[in-house]
Image (spheres, rainbow, N blue to C red):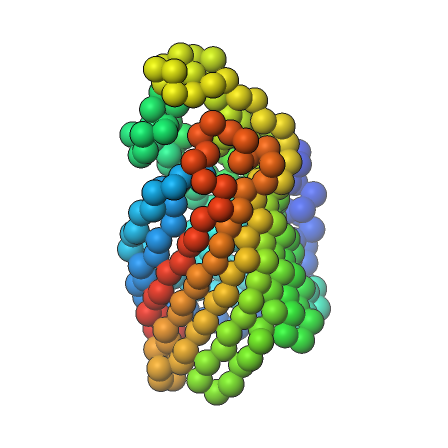
Length: 256
């Protein structure tokens, strides 16, 4: 692991591990299932792709396996109070290939890579706020912070519906990895792309709705739909075909 990552995250890891040793264990819960989702082929694309994905979450004591910042993740978490949770996690980010879309012709590929992150979440009644920061475990890929705010509008015996907003900020390295164009990439694009060096800044912001319907004691149907808009530094990239896009998915899960 790079020295920078160890130095940045070591205090958070130590605090979490110390708290794990003294706080009450969390209850065990597991959900497995399958879903299908749709989203732009890459951030800023005007064409969409659909794919199947597993629904998988597991919690056993302080260990969890669940999505974090939109990525599959595993980690440790603990409750500081009944409403406040902190944790650390490792996640996996998807690759992006130059052949994924015509606009990416000439761009270097983005490899599939791991991330190491920390998070905190606080719930007050029907409202929840969660902040996450993760560093790519790939040299030059940078770091990103995510703030998610959600509010549960209703929750009855069989169903619940929540609305939420997400803000995503990336440092200079992350912005240039996903939205920048280097001189050799511009030359390889046959005149399609211009050199572009974005600075750190707001990467995107999103509004979404999430619905869950309980089919039985164990089975549930889950749905998500939202709109994502790129920030100024991102949307000005020559890679971007459309600054706003729709995303969503539906899945069937079994909990035990």
